[in-house]
Structure formats: structure tokens, C-alpha cells
Image (cartoon, protein in one colour):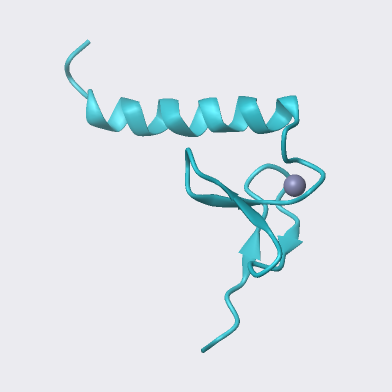
Length: 60
Ligand SMILES: [Zn+2]
């Protein structure tokens, strides 16, 4: 298998998918430094909002 090039979705740093945990809300890899931080929450909110916007487009 090809090595998957993953980056932390919060800070954009390259991470090893084997040792890096994922945020289950958005299913994206997150590095140790960002995990559990306020930045993570903000980013998750942003991403989920973006997804929600797509789903509810035209409803509001
Ligand atoms: Zn990070």
C-alpha cells in the first residue's frame, strides 16, 4: 500500500496515520498537540458548519 500523506486538520502538520488519532466527528487525522485543544473544537465546528451549510442549502 502507498503511504498515505496525512496532515493534521487543525494545524496542517504532517502526521503518521498509523500513530495519529482521528477526530471521529469529522473523520480527519489530528496530531497530539492539537488533540483536545480549543483549536480542535473551533475547527470541528467550522467543518461541521460547512457540511451543514451544504445539507441545508436553500432551507434558511
Ligand atoms: Zn495539529
